[in-house]
Length: 378
Image 1 (tube, helix red, strand yellow):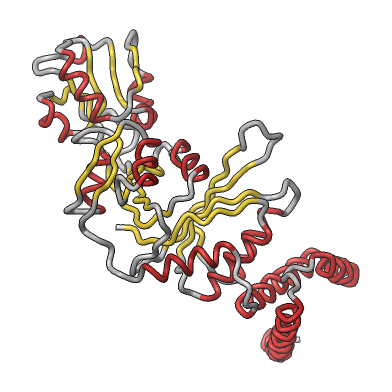
Image 2: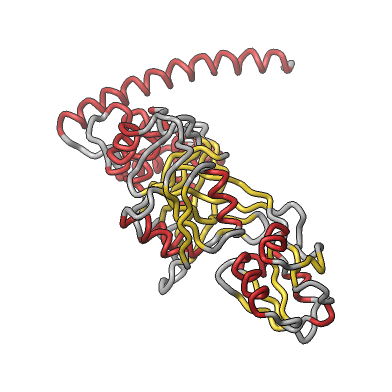
């Protein structure tokens, strides 16, 4: 048989498949109406297992492909039912509340909590996110969260991820423990330099101060040094300030070029970071959920049942609705037996009904589900 003839037959089968698919989705809508009227859950796992067992048995050596096809059909049917059923989940209520007070341009002013001192990368991020904001400096990431929760500051800015050194786990831990909302993010190019008092040579240095993230981002340079003590501190600007105030010719800081001018130091080595393409993402948090105009990113934390295929089920939900996932990172749960939580970032809008339905389905199916926010990045 010629290839053209085969393709003609495939086209005919595709026409039948489409008609049957639309008929199946219409029947799913009838099921949704019944479930809504009788207050039944969307997910009926026992029926899905029953159908999958029958399908794989009949599919012969193509059972794997049949299994994935019907799993995707189930995801699409559940997503459509979730759009139609009128009982909102916790995430739907949170998003509706956020949309009710949002849909306005992100403000240029407001009090914002920032960990560190003048010259810190977080301060630069504050200026990027709120150009005319009033910065309140605090000592720790936890203090940023406390300032926002207490109402002392309307916003808080925290580093969330570095392109060279990964996620800032301490910040994710705080987001897990406190119900705050991510309302904006910014990406900054980070340039680390070795700073010391004027006239000091690198060979005189015996101590180097910096934040642990910056230390990680300069690991190759630091690993090549001998007889030098590397001392973590609260942030890179504080490291520069400490070196300047110490008056020691044996101390240096890994910090930024603006901090050299700010604290009267000199750059003695500008080639200390592992990668010149070094970016850090900062998030802006608020106490109450709000989605500002232009929000096209979503951040989540989820935990899954410890079983084969659990992660695939989540990914298939996103793939079925053509939702782009830009981040997936696992983190072991402390004290557990090989259990993990996952940090997810999606390129999607919570205003899209199918996206909202997908988030509701994730909340129903995940052992733990936390919606961090819908926001735009600048």
